[in-house]
Length: 405
Image (cartoon, rainbow, N blue to C red; front, side):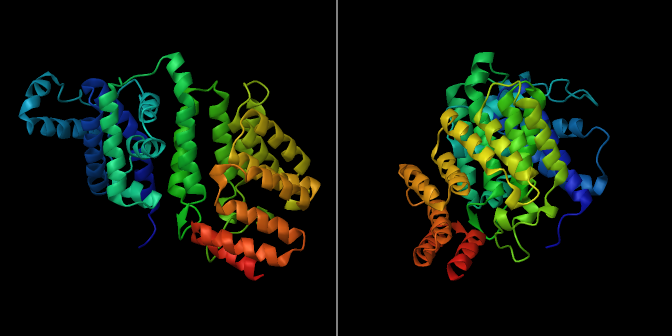
């Protein structure tokens, strides 16, 4: 299969940008998220078939609203019990009408409703705001299409059961639900940055979608420090993508990456956001993680990395937002500043957390530190154990190569 052409990529980007705006118009008019979301998906599919042939219409959002509205009416006409709603519904938008209100932010908060599970929030966000079909989400997440379809169906049913109203949450509700929104976007990004399973180390369709949605969120909430921090963290992390894998797809660790392949424009943007946000915003975990990523990205090479500064930032992060993965990542900084033996002590402490039991990264870090101490046999044992415990084939190949070495 040949890669998408620039025209195909541009069309995909346009449809994904317009999808939440079209859905917002329909939900605002009709109030039924479930039926409206299905109608929008049908309109997006119709556009992806006809626009490459007929050309993009002069008013693409109006075209999509009309197509989705017609699909919605067809649905209602097929259900006799809902004829009254059909009669009350405004069938067509005014010719050329473009909604003045952008409901993307309201949709994002609805898709991340606290009554939904994290996997359901991810799937629904990718579908409703990313414009991805169920099949595309399944391919991106490496899940069966039926599984993704069930998650989306259950999520929409749960929204209907809770009686959640479409619209911007109150200031209090927004403050309560913003962490779930940020967490969902970060989950999407992380699954794309280092795929938990499969042949590919990363999936750019997920990281790209997470960055796009976070940009939109920041445009709507420019004063939220954690939104800015998350965007900076994504940019600074994604900037290294091209250097993270070799021609054969094998993982290349940070210490061995060709930094000339890093995206300097993304690094500059991420650093600028960090520098503008940290002095004025209320501190948060995403801002601190972005600051750590900025120190890595600004180092000319691995040897010049300011590890004492990174460790100091991790110490603040552990105190501010403790968590097992934060503690695990901190062990590397401890080892770089205080030596591998101190790193092993920190690792033993972090590994006591039940959520890290059996995690391949614990064994991978332990193997590296044992290797640094010269205990080759123990290092090889833990490299092999880490390789057995990861489902990512690029990671597995890297760990097996380290074990052999």
